[in-house]
Image 1 (cartoon, rainbow, N blue to C red):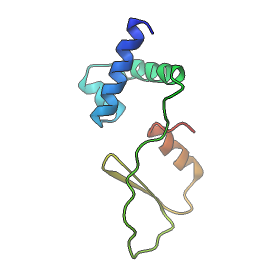
Image 2 (cartoon, one colour):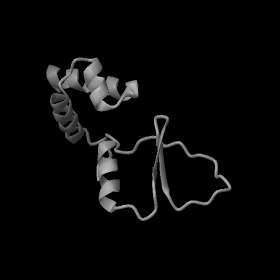
Image 3 (cartoon, rainbow, N blue to C red):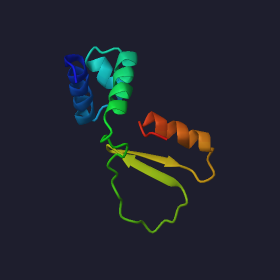
Length: 100
């Protein structure tokens, strides 16, 4: 990898460690979001070992039974009601950075 690739790989790793969303991380670090996304995609394509899975916290079951989809990441919980439009779910997964 050349110096530029290593530089952006380091930025992407720092972003992952920050726990921030891409836009907020870019704002705080004076990075143009479009450039950030281009490099993230380029590096994602170059690294066959990059996992698209994110750690998920498994919550203990509660007495309330729900058919809703509940996603918890980085301290944020998102509930998708049963019967929601598949496009909504696809857009959400894409926004979270999950390759679909």
